[in-house]
Image 1: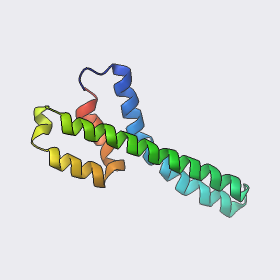
Image 2: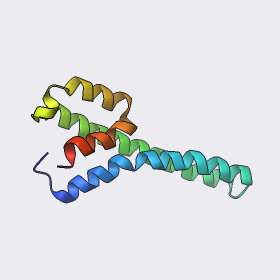
Image 3: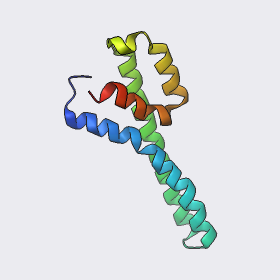
Image 4: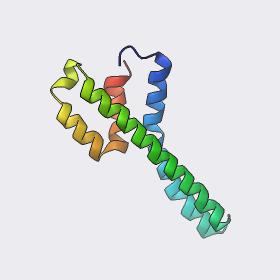
Length: 107
């Protein structure tokens, strides 16, 4: 992954960070809008579903990229901890993806 273009690395970093704030915003804004009666129920729920689905797709795509990187890596910092990182990425992916990007992909 060291041969990746800088723009690709920045894009991967952005995509690793985006899903969590999106999910938090949806879980706060949707009930607030519905409680205050500020929007059409179907419209608000529809947009919330689209944002949640998009977050899920981003998480799955980033998980696939990260797991492929772990599996194929020869990085000495990662070789001894492959099983650990695979487990962490699988079970705590939303929180682990930004950490993984920062530690291994951003260089």
